[in-house]
Length: 284
Image (cartoon, rainbow, N blue to C red):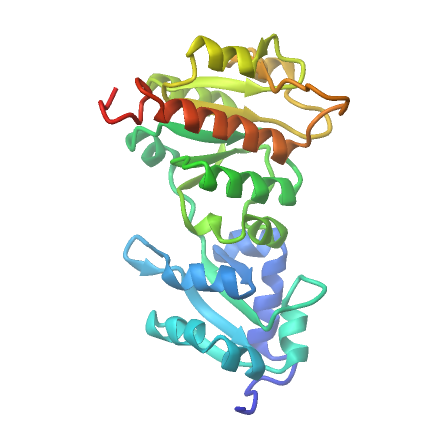
């Protein structure tokens, strides 16, 4: 097993990487951390604007040996690879039990105008979502449901927060993500492209099952998800075309944000793929 080159947590490279755990440094450098083999593998495969997303990789000797394919992929895209001691990797990592790989990646957010130009059929819009774990999990749900984009408003959490990146489990690298978009601009822009904008809210006056039964869910749709603690403010709900609730058939008080998002997104995905939906073979 090779000997680590970086053994001091006070190394300039280590200090520079560690600073990326803080939002202000991420914004200044337009770089973020991706931890663990899944995220680093996805980062190594991702390119934006002709440039590789992964620019630097810190790996313990054990991880470099175990994930030789990932380290090789990192080198193939021109990333600078450092063999580092376990202490160094632990100092950079933001997890309790580091997995031995930490990558530094370029920001990969997509301008909102490009999201609109692609004529998306399914979008998750996060308005005032403050918990990074929730944001990352909704992004993962959107990816799994086949959404074309995720949009985070200017009042939402930083999608490059290490917890959000981990919670996305690599999905951050799979679909366009627009950040810092005012909610009014997001709704206005999507509606102008023929997208129906629905607010997901437990107090909604429309029932998701009823909407599916009526056949209203087959067209291009954007779901607006709010803060888990206090939901969507009235002014945001008023911007949308309808406020829809997920029906609770049992005794549960409510669903958490990520679970409700998964239900809503998959409901739209299924309706869009049904005969006559916007993804049907007829192209309607």
